[in-house]
Image 1 (cartoon, helix red, strand yellow):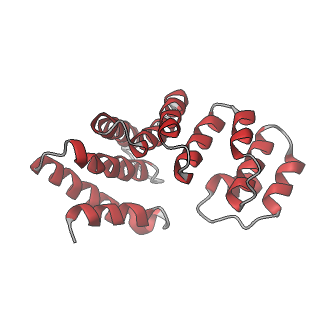
Image 2: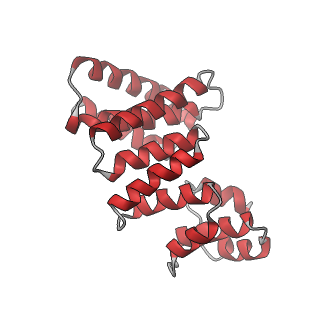
Amino acid sequence: MSQASLTERVSAAAHQRPYRDVADELTKALSQLLAAQAQVDVSGAGSWSYLTESDLRIQLSKAPCADDRYAQEWAALLAAARAVSLNPACARPWLTLAEAAATRGLYRVAEAAAERAYEIEKDEATVVAGYLQAIINVGRYEDALGLLGSASDSWSQCVRGYIALRLGKADKAIQHFADVTIDPTWFRAWYSYI
């Protein structure tokens, strides 16, 4: 298995586990990725390494005892911007930039990046989800509800519940949350429902 593949797998798997269980793996994966970037030309098709770097840094910045949170968040934003510059016609780098910007509290930057991703690939569920999250973060609730349309899957119901709560409609929010099984990784839904 290549170093790139291993690093991506660690990054993806870490989203499903508590930080305390993956802290060492994330740190090691980031170190190995940075070493690989220093040894090879990662331009063009190699933008994946910056996407993975950004994701790893975002996860490390969210650690409960992270003393370098600020540095990790800015480095994640820089890595995502590099990925966009190397592959601007692809939606994934724009979504990664949106996530990194939101992590740093730059919600208008996140909105613009997610909007660009949506313009590139409107039919991809991950892109739609990223765009929804970005427009909700800046208070564009009606636009988000319009984008959801009549979708009735669990995730869409949770998004509707979150929006209802933000609009001060707690009873309506509870109806949306109570009617679905909330995936454990949907933190906003869990915290809103609780």
